[in-house]
Amino acid sequence: MKDISAEEQLIKLAYRRRYAEHSRVYQMAKVYLFSPSSGLFACPLAMTDGAAKTLEGFRSPELATAFERLSSASPDKFWTSGQWMTEKRGGSDVGGGTETVAVPAPDGSYRLYGYKWFSSASDSDVSLSLARSLDEQGQPVPGSRGLSMYFLETRRPDGKLNNMQVVRLKNKLGTRQLPTAELQLNGTVAHRVGDQGRGVASISAMLTLTRVHNAVNSVASMRRILQLARDYSRRRVAFGRRLCDWPLHVRTLAHMEVETRGCLALVLHIVSLLGRQDAGVAGDRDTLLLRLLTPICKLYTAKRAVSVTSEGLESFGGQGYIEDTGIPRLLRDAQVYPVWEGTTNVLSLDVLRALAKSRGEAWTALTSDVTERLLPAAAAIDSLRPITEKVKNILNDVGNILKKQDSSLEVSARDLSFTIANTYICALLCHHAAAPDADDEDRTVALRWADREMAPLLARRRPDRADESRDELRLVMAGYETDD
Image 1 (cartoon, one colour):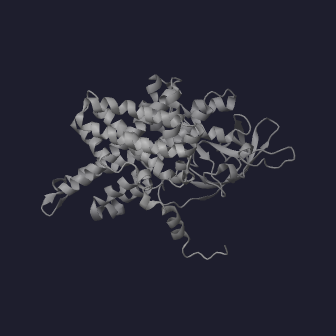
Image 2: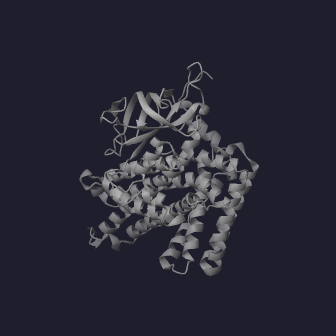
Image 3: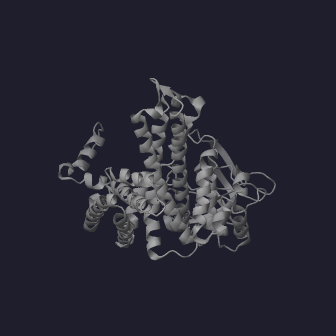
């Protein structure tokens, strides 16, 4: 898989930029096709792409060489990268949970000492790692300001591990063919990436890319299980008829199809925005939308991948529950998508931060973009006009909630994220349905998508649900005996 990835230029395509701003779309389309058959090699590919983007443009010999090998099309030269960020005290909270320290060496490099608790793709050639700087007294600098990014090779020139010990391999629910390890770093030779104290900032650009990969892989998993279920429905006979001849079963598959198409539309749109940023042609609105929609895209497609894969497994009946078929593995592996690169709640709070930091500009960019997609669609196809009004009303109501800056918005962050995802996907599908080369299926998908409850944020803010947060707290705390 590593050799195939190099030969197919699954990383290089994005940095060669042969197709300018569309190079990312071309790359991710190939990753989308490759992912379901890659034996989870799409995971180290995601981290390799993130490392390449992080190291691109650095001129030091070590980092420049690393970038060339990470983006190489030669199997003999191609390197893959891991990401060693998670430690015992923290997952997403790298600022407070990173205890690994970086000790300067006389030759300008660093020696890393610490314990990496969850090191994905630990058999990669290189890795990026966070570590904490030391002050003049030799004490770790606290908080995010003490963190820097470091590049390291996992093995020394003699082939031995780079002053590290593999403590154990993780026994995981899924992704078992992908080695994930607990690593003890005992003076691991590393080179700092960027300025000291800029580790969290370095992660931001890398996370954007790895979250996009996560979304691409999520939708690829959805498409794989759907194709299998569709094929099985043409072969399996139950009660004298093939499954595909039972309207209820067809409706189930149709629902999975709509979910998959909607998620794919969102993913490819985010990829196109990323490509514009890579090529230096992104406008202000593109940049705002990329920042706001990336965490939404990741969290939404990840949750949908689990539900669609579960539905697909069920469509096989008892066969889907048998390990020999390989289908249970698809469900176990899909369950990682909501966990990797930030959980649903962590990403939902990140959406709130993106809206707050832009001081309303991100929301304005979103609403104007949706409007520009929906109005031509409604003018072209009469059946899409009610959808335009529905989405417009939803966004107007959500905008009014955001203006109030209600403190309760934090507990509704997940509902907000799902509301934005539903409405934005609806706009993308309507826009696509009105294209000159669209067909009846495209219009059906747009109509079916709009015929759902698209605004959980608004549904939960009805007067009859005003006390829901207090009730939830009561339910959670029931059975706990505390002194306060």
